[in-house]
Length: 430
View 1 (tube, rainbow, N blue to C red):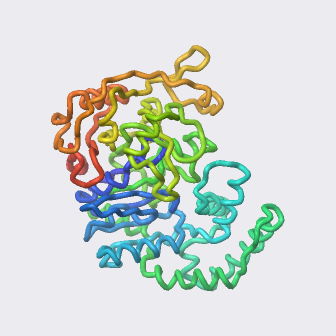
View 2: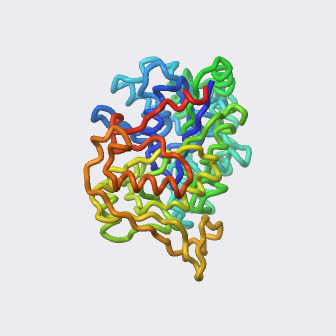
View 3: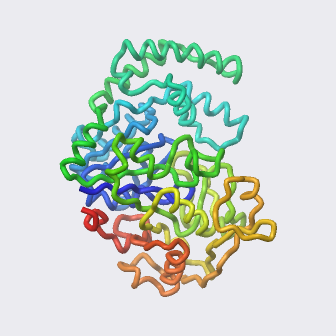
């Protein structure tokens, strides 16, 4: 038995979906443990593009169980759309392959409307998918869960009570239109018919799988710097993105986790508002964006791009307990004369080697760079790190030195086979 958590080591969009897809070949179960459909994992398989917002990336393998855990907030319409699209393309032939925790909370129409209206006031950079307001209801203890939807009487009662306060807030505070009870009720009871067969006691199922010696892969959404507690608050997501939440968000104990793998791009990106020390607001940044196709999988928004930030990645290593690193999109940097790595932040004449919690300090910090020669050679044909251009090898070696971790995988293209140094991560554990 072995359980491995895959987490993002930057601001999300690191390419976790591809890494999870690759490692699923060695796993038996893949679990998504937090977030909602505000995140998108993109996978390219035989030239065909797949974008997942809720369903774990491992769903493209037959005979692999995929679980949406209790820590995820679920928009049923989005889930049904993903299921329908998968079946249309010849996947998810067996409904039992996909399970949704009965303890997962629902996103409802009023969550989305509140989300959009409030972001116009606070400018956090939300996707407007209702994720934050759904988590607020969960914490306030009047959220509506999947298990409630499965019982029409309970769902009616909870929805009616929630609509009283939501409509008051929408109309009186946000000056928005409210919702009709019967319309939401009818819509969600139809969703129940379509997804009811997937709703299970996944905590118990996962526990039994682990006891049987199965290999479990836990898939995080977003990245460490978007963590609600340890990210660049308030410009963060509404859940804990760190590896520790794999337990709470799936319903198992911490002694059942064996290893944590971090994923980082060969450069840095972020979506939405908030500080970004290495951001390049010039032609180089635009060039990285275009070469890397850096547009949000969920919203289509252009991502902000910058050089690799070792300070950010070391922060992620510390708060996640990351033990090895996967580097993605190395090919994007193949046409640059020079590449840079941020090794510290200069503020008031001092150099910081950590991410400060005070965002005012972070905003005023200047990145301290090391400059390396670029390679300007094709990397996609490489099968081993030793086959990469020497300058590309040097770049990766310097990153390893700065983060003090071994890089065990390198993605050099979007396809499955455009990845080098893939090893079975479960073998060395179990």
